[in-house]
Length: 414
Image (cartoon, rainbow, N blue to C red):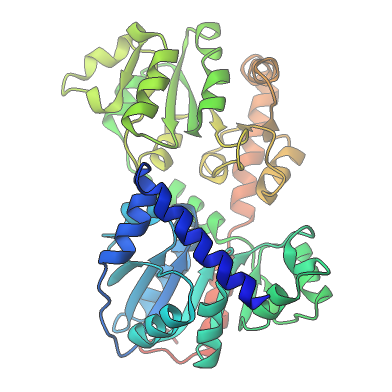
């Protein structure tokens, strides 16, 4: 099985290399790894994230651990360009790198170069040679905000190789009881239920949000429907709402903001009523006549929800929905597509009547009508969304307590 794993890694690399000739993300993936130069360290705290979403998820632990150990260098690695390119200059790390391809040589060299005291991976990311190298060098690896499902390969009869990988993890901080029980079913007991650190992150964001003058000018006295991290299938449905609610304003923040993606979105929207965020001038009075605002930059979405009344979260007609909790933390009922089964928080919000899954234009219009026309229904959904977020905070402190007890890091808080 190890041989097949190695072959699959090299085939994946070859596929990305081919794609790099016509795909910008793939080009970043290849060129970024090729050009980076690692700095040799005496010790560090190593955080690895798959992409931007996992970075935000693990950020509360990163901030705490860094604050409590100011003399220890922090290294962050990303697998995906969408994480690295946006956070490569983050002040939360001393060094930010692409994770080199998972080969025995790369893993050994990387870990010997950065010399981590501990390694923390968020949610998932199971790279055999890195995990094995950490184990061989007796460096503890923690998986935080981990979540497991019965259909994953670890729990299949043919998943022995991947189960062995899990045995090399020092401790699992899982999101729920189901995950802990699944690990126990394959004889892994070093797990504790901490919850999801995303709740801490989004709740802190909601409590310490900064105002946005441009959005306040756009909103005026209107209610706002915010569509975050949307993809074309989401946008095809969303445009039908605009003429139905002329007194509402709409903010659409696409997941991808390349020139072609934004151009295609704009073609679906009423030109006279639409403005791009990048086109806003110092004269904000022009925003009053606009009904639709297209966000064509990165990093603004989490701040936008403070002005929203209803949120739509994209991705549910593709690989899976994006972050519902950022909106829920502000008390926004959240709507999303049908592909949400892998997301515990989405299922929880549905049970609370604070989250709503739609599969068509008709079902989208139906739930929006309910939320707009039935004030009691809306207020209850809003309350449940915010309360759910607040009640599930605390994962970061549980993780930090364990790490403090088991590791004497430089300058650790007493």
